[in-house]
Length: 168
Image 1 (cartoon, rainbow, N blue to C red):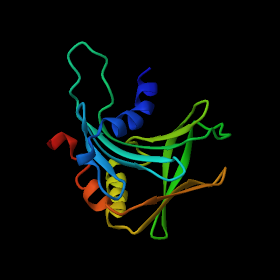
Image 2: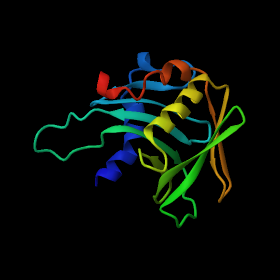
Image 3: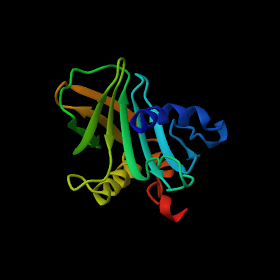
Image 4: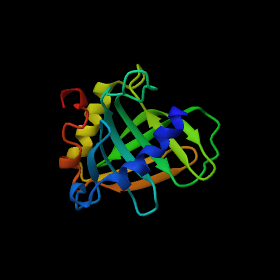
């Protein structure tokens, strides 16, 4: 149930953001229900979102997700059997493989990174810093071959201190 709600979160957050919080270059930013986010959707409908959620759930309620996480989703179902796959973030020609959990839906495929020994928060912070300073970005998979381009225009401001949710 919580996982399904998290997969809907990027769409809800993009709808909930007032126009004044949107970056002109396509990166939407803001805070919604204790979750800071920066994200964008490319021309083909692929979505990339970077999130940091405070632990602000009311006492007695189901705890939501807290801390740093990254979601990448495609508007199509892929033929994947693995529960986790490396998703490659290529910034200015330099590739970084990030292990991400796979969720297959009827018409979409979502990939989810959360801190682990395989790829730590510090490693993701370094990647996000690279995104902030980069010129070009593609996110993709080796098998099946998927390459989705995203703009990095505006990412410097949108991603600044995105993982500092505990300091807000």
